[in-house]
Length: 111
Image (cartoon, rainbow, N blue to C red):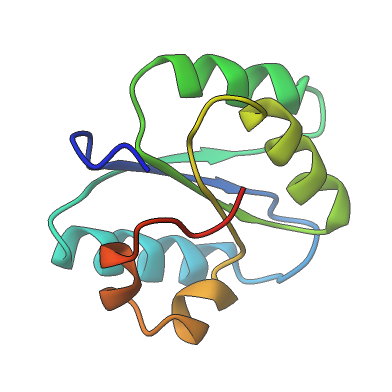
């Protein structure tokens, strides 16, 4: 995890996986901001090359990515992060499981 960079990116597919994107976005922003992180949100349209979008975001100094959507969204985000050293938290359910925001102190989430 790039602990020197506390910017987290949420990649959310509003029509796949969990179908409450506004609630997910709000929880993400609140949880990370309370833990001292800045946040960015990218909402998919289905027309983009998501792997490339994530690769470009990874190059722009983010410290963590949270992906919310179905298997395809998670897979494309993971592929975009490959070899970047940036951890991926697959879904906002992760925030509940890890007891957000305390999980942000962990040395690595996954990937």
